[in-house]
Length: 304
Image 1: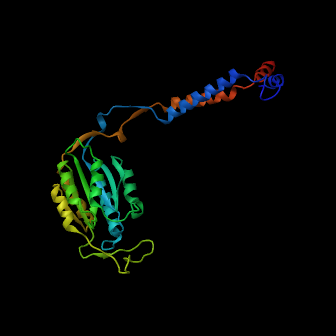
Image 2: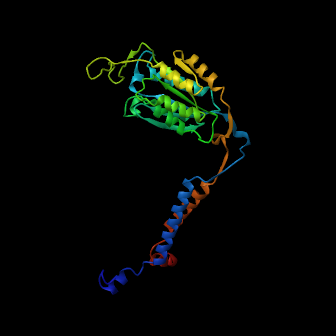
Image 3: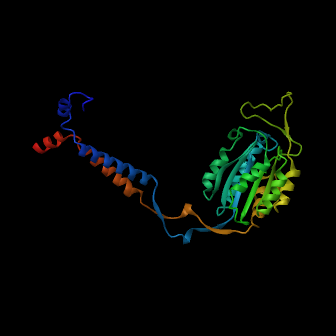
């Protein structure tokens, strides 16, 4: 008060201020904020889980999104046909958990294992080479990322569906297949494209892609490596030509995997408590607004 000015004058100016009321308002605000935070966490209690137990397998789709997947030896292009196959396969396996890995010059987990097939379809539909800056095709990295999605303690119930044109820029793919076979992971490979090869059309310009020398790039399917990867892990190789036939062949292969029972949280009924805390928050905020900060206001209200 001395630093502000004459202590007597300052005291006269703030005589209506009530530290107790100010502290009370702050306390109400603090408790309201805490109640709001707890409401946002959505505290809930699970209900009866007997009716939502499913039996299924864990399947990770590793999708090649390198620019070579824009080749048009499959219409409209390799990538779109691969997406169609994934979505049709998911429709036929509603009780299984689905994961998605995208890869090109690097591999990324786009979606962890989930029973939410609706969300999975959205991720698959939006997949494109734009999602990964580094171009190329590193199959070994894609397999490792896919393996990371599984429970390492289990040696059954899991499979990887590797969908690519097989133009691998990584020499460790076969070694990685041996490691995954030891972990009990079945890798089914799906070859997209033709052995003869095709030109790569850039969707942005509609022109064929060219190399540094100005020659048009021809992308060819590498079936040999894909067949070797599948063989090492007791999987199967499928050449994607007719989408329905490829889906049926894949489902037949996946049906050989033992299925496990697990609880599906997406169908579980929960008793939620967020509204109690939200209601408390709004009540405290209303009370805080009604509490004055000055003594004089209370006196005047009483006089009135």
